[in-house]
View 1 (cartoon, rainbow, N blue to C red):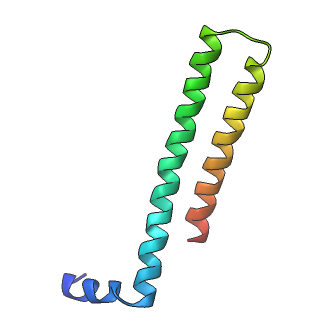
View 2 (cartoon, helix red, strand yellow):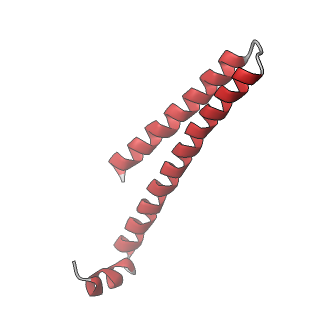
View 3 (cartoon, rainbow, N blue to C red):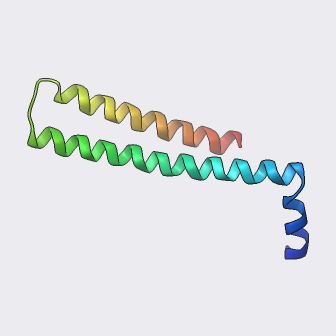
Length: 79
């Protein structure tokens, strides 16, 4: 692939859409990592501070991570 052909193609509508789709996927991957870090933080919180709602917090954190991972995989397939 020649760089002289790639740069002008980025300034077309199709090239712009491809760049935006790539950026959306990158942002979703970053958010998926953030959601995983939230699960780790909730795990540390529940080990240091025991309440009756600890199971609920952990479950909600994992559901949040699974939805984030699911939407990231879905965006790979769609975009």
